[in-house]
Image 1 (cartoon, one colour):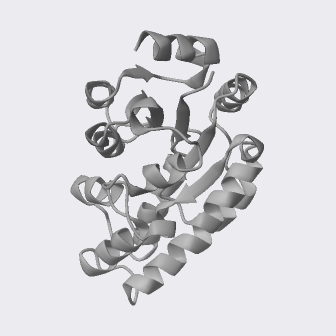
Image 2 (cartoon, helix red, strand yellow):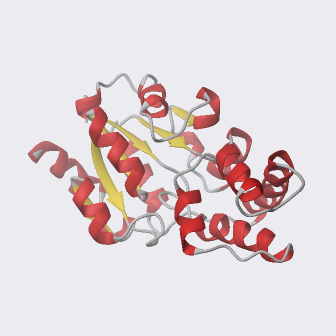
Length: 223
């Protein structure tokens, strides 16, 4: 189908990794004798990795410096992406189906570029993506639409005909404010409750197994 493009978030959207990200903060903190509060977890969810590392050091007392915290997180997560991460059920089939129907796609993620590349390759998505971009490439975060526009530049579509799929409420806010279309997939309440996601998206799914490529393209046509 010509004229539309799709940009996927990676963690929590295409792959089952948010548990690992949430656990790495808690695990590193616990190893240092620090307990993170719900407020800490909620704050960290919307931050870039450098911001989260600085928060964990400055507000929670983890590590010798924010750079030290970042290095610890990277070490743990690189091993996870290389050896453990898996695609969410139905995600690869959905991507393959859109590719077969001529829909250009990209990945836009808050994950560092080197880990992101490993993840997308390991889980089988790489051959179907026009681009795989990280907020780190642009020195920004998903509170701004720059990473989505950068991904969109590889698709040749305008914002109104470009769909972003996200599991995080704050990222859906960014997409909609910038004039993108938005589909939400539920992963966990920290990223966004079902109610919060549905309020910000054109539609919400619980799993990729709940949406076929043809059903999605029908939604696009009706919208």
